Image (cartoon, rainbow, N blue to C red):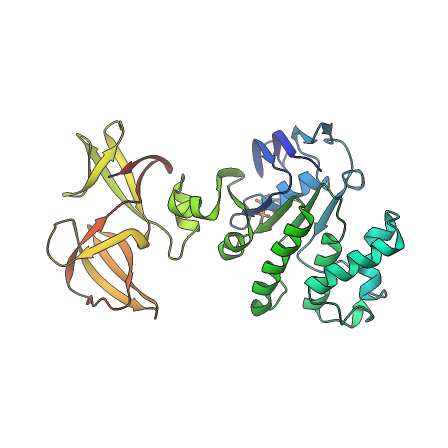
Length: 354
Ligand code: ATP
């Protein structure tokens, strides 16, 4: 197994008028579990199909280790792919479906049996092995598809395109942790496509965020949460997403309207910026010290915490506060942006606030 390297790889479905995937250079490191996260239409499937060879990129070159595979068809790339919906031999038993990829590559019989039993145990299929696949419900069939993708130990990568879509929500949690367990066992490079942040954050060593055909940031779940490099990452990850307020900088101070909300760290040319701060890092005081004055418009009592919604100078913001706090709609309070507040210009992070 080896790193998978994309060099200037991009794809256009319309002869270069628009780019579903803008040319990018990127390495998928051997043995790492990645989530490829982004909204519908951002190019996730396009990127995945380029790695597997189902799609030939319009530009760029692809390397599996030292071997260039740009014009190698899927069958020659040694990739396992799992799709959104089950892909099975319906007339075969679950056992034979799981064994098929191994038998196809002439694995010894004992090893086939051992791999099938390991994967089926981890995925909770061990009591289903004798059943005909067509008799299973769609959720179970998809778990068998997942097993087929994970059963071969020697693949260059396992590519999973929204693999849990048809699975019952309660079972999704279990399967994600099973996937992690299988990943620890096999050391496959995994690329897991999803538009669901929870799925991405709970599964991956590294989350790659795609927007409009471009990678805007990649990092551990904590890095993306604590240090978003792009406004989109702030919005898309977190619940609710990051607050964004238009601001000005002057003499190192950051002003939202008339209020000084902090001091810009580092050199920043004067002019408009956006302040981004996650609801978790907004602090509210009733009187002192003064901060950004805002009118509280509503309070959502979520049980474990409260969400305090407010409005300042025509802009909305929200704070996530302890469940024992008592703020009332209609009152005003001071909102403070401590620690993890950042400055963005043209959506890209350009500084932070102290
Ligand atoms: P989803 O989560 O909805 O599957 P995605 O992030 O996987 O979305 P892609 O399916 O890669 O996104 O699509 C990226 C862009 O390319 C979209 O604008 C889509 O409409 C377009 N596109 C995808 N496949 C084709 C195709 N075969 N022909 C033309 N345009 C396509």
